[in-house]
Length: 212
Image (cartoon, rainbow, N blue to C red; front, side, top):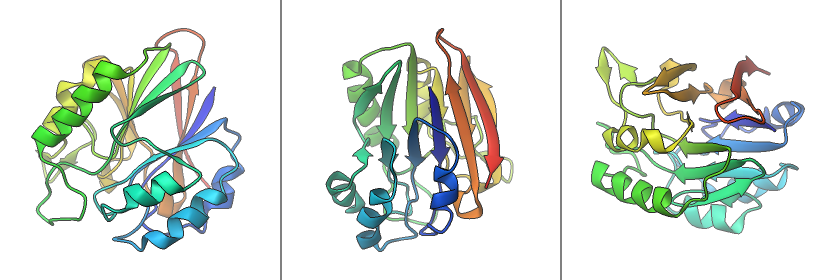
């Protein structure tokens, strides 16, 4: 199963068709779909995607984007989970607090509560994936020498085989933390994406960073 991961569109949807030209079985979007709104473009965006699409909001998305996602052709994954074949996806939208007081920020306690509920109820399959806008603390989360990722995401890390995150534009990449793979696909507004191949066996997850 091949899954296309994009994030940080920030309202720039001009490369969507190029992303769809990448051969994939599904698409997942790790937040910042808009740039502080407007949300009325969300329905049209997802109607153009002709493969299963799962999404969470980012900290730069208005909180009422959750309602727009629920009404769209995408699956809103914040605080929820779904299984596609051998892969279970769980979702966390927004981010831990930032200095900028962006629209969709959660306290670490709120993040912990959301993830606790998801982890307790999700079906476990061959590959278990967290789609989270914010990275776990300690992985792809450094700004000026300071790790700004979520401590709550880090606490729940071992419940997953892979964390797909975004948020920190400067930290596109693939790494491993506590034996769990973490990927930031880069900025979709600049044509960056990741293609994730899920193999038959557990832990057989191959990730390719690319751009259109």
